[in-house]
Image 1: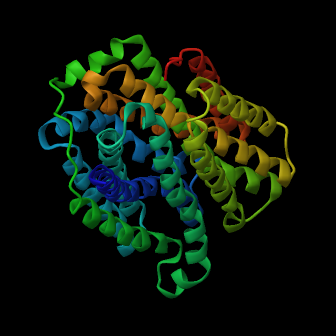
Image 2: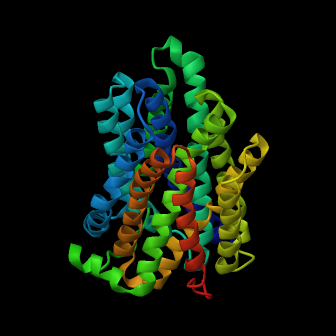
Length: 396
């Protein structure tokens, strides 16, 4: 009886810790609003594809600068405090656009959003490892990505709602999504701050250069490049999907914005189902199935023009890309358990792919005179993930 009571108390304690952490995953999804926002800013200011893609590129540029230092910061102040710091920076980034929408204002806001998200993604994922057994880490991170994706697919819906209804009366238009997400960010700070979490002892390492030397390990380098391709496809689809519909179906931006929501709906569904599928089949097999779905979709986008076919391809990419990050991240952490903070920093630095891919896609689209150029760039990323599938550790 006493043993059962202790077990029940332990489960309640774990659930009380998991809920605030999952709310932080929701806040992590705020970074994906940049795809929707860049399309609205492009429309408002008459920017080219290359100019508009500067916004998502700028957001993910900061992952290159701050990810590894954040891994070192966690060794000093702990993972939970680092997450709280990231939430505070994210909150500031969400407040700034409420007061204006000039080009400079949006650049500052998206820069802070990128910095805050770099800190959050570096620290939140290893914080989960303090609560979950290694064997369940991939499925738990996948569930966290499911929660994150909810915030992602809500962004274009809230923006379109704001652009046509209450946002206009408030003088905010599509920017109404910023105060809504800011309120959630405040709640996340309050809940996580009040939640006690016993953390693992800080890693013994290291300096900045010592962290970068971990890329000298072949498997860690492969994981790093895999993360780059994953986020490149993610941000690329987020940004390009509405443009495809406007280009091939002559839809308005508000109408075409559903393509972004569709992508994140299927990515959300993929994360939710993936959390269970990964407990039943190997990560390697599920990864391979996911990559095949994306490859079929990318090839089809070169030739498809009908609305149903375009929606189907976008949905396939959303579902296929939903579990890529979690599997790669878990593979990297479990491969180097003695330096998880540093490896986490390196993996999140790989989100710099969100800078490289949109820039390359924007230039390719302008060069080809259409979105075929952007699709070609994303296809390269999918082909690399197909290669990475062969390197996944069978034991994980």
